[in-house]
Every structure is written in structure tokens, then in C-alpha cells.
Image 1 (tube, protein in one colour):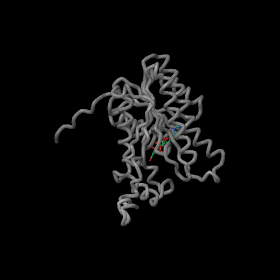
Image 2 (cartoon, helix red, strand yellow; image 1 turned 180 degrees about the vertical axis):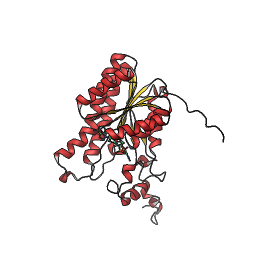
Image 3 (cartoon, protein in one colour; image 1 turned 90 degrees about the vertical axis):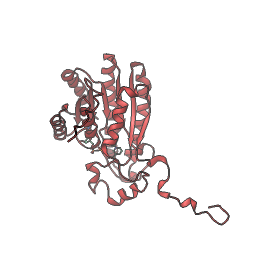
Image 4 (cartoon, helix red, strand yellow; image 1 turned 30 degrees about the horizontal axis):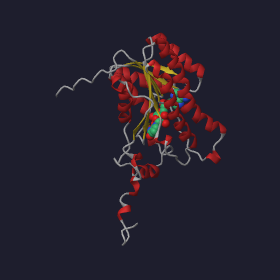
Length: 276
Ligand SMILES: NC(=O)c1ccc[n+]([C@@H]2O[C@H](COP(=O)([O-])OP(=O)(O)OC[C@H]3O[C@@H](n4cnc5c(N)ncnc54)[C@H](O)[C@@H]3O)[C@@H](O)[C@H]2O)c1
């Protein structure tokens, strides 16, 4: 069998912290970094998931450590940053990926449910970015931050108020941080995935088949995205190839946001006078 070409090692000697790397998109991002030479910090609220992901990365020949952290708890975030500095020397890359999903109408949503979603998806990235940025600026070697937003930052969804609002907030946090940290050579960008095929989405409780089918009809490229496709964009933004890109949001969505694709060619059915 022909030998596989060696992967580029764009991240040798770099330390990348990926929150929510115990599952789904975060795990794919962690795998991609590890495959290109980074030492990955698998940071997740679920200790078991973090350990399992970490063991997988190491078994595949990568370098990784697992840290249990709730990104919405500032004391835990500070401890994580201190632990990573102590064990690995410093942090070069941060990916704010951890997320929770809750589908509820505003009229049915409790204050606690709203708070949890916003705490994890907006306050969490604020806290982790704050403490990692303090470390990066003190260290003076620059850095890269990538926030995982969502199409929900730009397009509302029924039963998604807290999710959409937190992701929209995350995009604005990205822009402000990009400006505040530019003088320290820390780039901050966002990646907005469309509908991605993660194990959690395969659970009918999370995403009904009917919803998935209707959604896929809105995707010009005709399928859900793969976690690796999000990871590749994150790695580009974390690499030196993206040194002059900051404060931006990149859509990885199969063309979903290009327009009203589900309407198809209906507009072509013009009336006798040529007007629809
Ligand atoms: N899957 C999609 O279609 C999709 C689309 C757009 C955006 N996103 C975003 O991508 C990110 C990852 O989503 P996913 O689909 O992989 O979800 P997932 O549920 O598979 O993984 C989320 C991970 O975050 C961890 N987590 C949850 N709360 C945490 C906390 N407080 N602290 C630390 N870790 C925590 C979970 O334990 C889990 O491992 C989320 O921010 C999500 O909003 C996903």
C-alpha cells in the first residue's frame, strides 16, 4: 500500500486549549490540532468525556492533557489557566467551543434555563478569553483565539432565544476582543458552523428527523457538515497563514446563508406579462 503523505505540522511546539473538546466539534478540533503537532488541552465540564478524548488523542500519537472545567465558573477557569501554565509552560491558542443546547419558547423558559445557556455560551468565552488573554499579554508572544459561534448568531430560530442571543453576543465579543488585543498580536476570530453532524444531533430528542430534513433542503451543498470541516477552518485561523485576519466571522455552512435556497426556482414561474 502506498505510504500516506505526512501531515503538515503547523502547530509543533504550540499549546492549544479547546473547551468542550470532550465531544462533537470540539473533539474534531482537538484531533486536528494534535495531528498537526500541537499539545492539546482537552477542557470539558464532563471529566469522563475529557479523559476519553484525551486518551484517544494520545493513542493516535498526539500530545494532550485533560482538564475538567466549567467555563462559566471564573474560579475554575483561573485554575485551568494556572494548571496549563504549570504543566505545559503557556498557551498559544484558545478555542472557545463549549456549548449547551436548550429548545424552549421564551414564554416557557425559566430564568435558570436562560441563564445557563448564556452563562456557558457567552459568559464562558468572556471568562476564558479574559484569563487566557492576561496570560498571553504577560508572556508577550502573541496568540490566536477562535470562538465557535453559529448561524444562530445571524438568523433567529423559534425555541432558540437564549442560544441565538448568546451566539450573537459572542460575535460582538469577538470583534471587541480583536481590537483590544491587536496591539499584543493576539488575533480573535469566530467560526459559524451551519448544521453539523455530531453524535448529539443524531439523538431525536435533540434534533427531530423532520427538522433535519427541512434544514438540509435549505443547504445548497445538500448535506449536513462534518465536524472535520469546521476544524479545518479553525486551524487555518489559528495558523500563521491568518496573521492578518482578526475580528472576523467565517461561515462553514454549505452555503446556507447565501440566500433563500429552499425557494428553488419558484421565481422563474412568471406571469403572462413577465411579472411574478
Ligand atoms: N452541531 C452543530 O450543528 C452546531 C452548529 C453551530 C454551532 N455549534 C456550536 O459548536 C459548539 C460545539 O457543539 P457540538 O455540536 O459539538 O456540541 P456537543 O454537545 O457535542 O459538545 C459540547 C461540549 O461542550 C461541553 N460543555 C458543555 N457545557 C460546558 C461547560 N460549562 N464548560 C465546559 N464544557 C462544557 C460538553 O460536555 C460537550 O463535551 C457549540 O458552541 C455549539 O453551539 C454546533
